Image 1: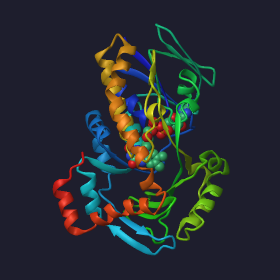
Image 2: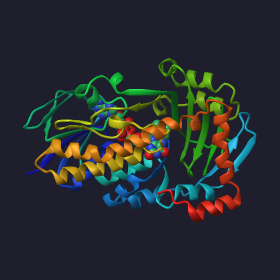
Image 3: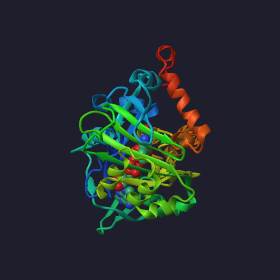
Image 4: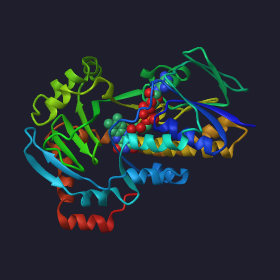
Length: 384
Ligand SMILES: Cc1cc2nc3c(=O)[nH]c(=O)nc-3n(C[C@H](O)[C@H](O)[C@H](O)COP(=O)(O)OP(=O)(O)OC[C@H]3O[C@@H](n4cnc5c(N)ncnc54)[C@H](O)[C@@H]3O)c2cc1C
């Protein structure tokens, strides 16, 4: 008998779940609110649990094709003058062999290609209600359709509708880390930004970075500390960024002014801390369940690794979905807890709160650039 699953969200978590469940003989259907694929994004370091899962799920070759290798890191002052740089060699030593530098859209693309034609994706559809009993779960959509399935996966991100409908309001689970983040892809490389490099202006309060991973693969990224993230979001990205980065005269002003409305990610940096990730036949996956934030640099890895582990647990308990979900959660909790703690600790290195944070951030990078240290790192340090 075919087993049906409804997956809400066609981000990395949702597509990874669709692929894994399809590989195990399930018939998943994906519901995505956006009218078309969301392939854009920011630069992502992909390693650890997700890397192993991608290998086993067969998408590693597609990811490796998109991997750019280690990139240089160039640090500039607010007016564009060069401070120091770290070569890709040193960064490569830190990343290890089982780590990839990608755009978010590269992971989305590899997953999408793996499920295309096999798993239906309903774009422009969203969820309005969920009901469940021992027989199954029913997802009502905004066009009036009701989908019936054995399992519903809420992979709909930080502001999950599934979580709100089944587990309660977002405020109960969201922990703001006192920062906002903006990211956008660029169709050109601003003057002074390095090719195959992360060019960064770091100063007390926040950072601004232009990342280039090759032709047509450039993204800009901003994150800064604020006592009131909601007030910043209310201003909209153009005014908020123009205010927060008015001291940065290199590249930022023109770039902020020309950001297209349909290509800006702008949100508070928030974790989701939930005491359970499943309720009967409904399970949360990825940022919807445990958002670790960009400060942990591990959300896509956990999304892919979590999806694989979910499929494996369902395989071990084919007749008892709630038991599978409990076992899956117990397996993932320790790592998620560790990564969330890391995300909270790392706020200072992404948006230094004072001069000491700035020094703590710069010192290891400057050291890694020193050739004997680079060689030592390459020989001895395998992080993954
Ligand atoms: C700037 C930045 C840098 C990052 N860097 C890294 C990194 O270096 N390494 C790393 O591993 N991770 C990184 N991450 C985190 C990583 O990108 C995410 O954790 C990961 O992509 C998992 O996201 P997701 O699929 O759970 O959620 P999302 O990407 O938010 O996807 C959710 C999907 O659900 C859809 N949706 C939402 N609501 C509904 C609804 N009601 N109905 C239907 N569909 C809906 C959305 O349109 C979206 O497509 C970074 C994140 C950011 C913002």
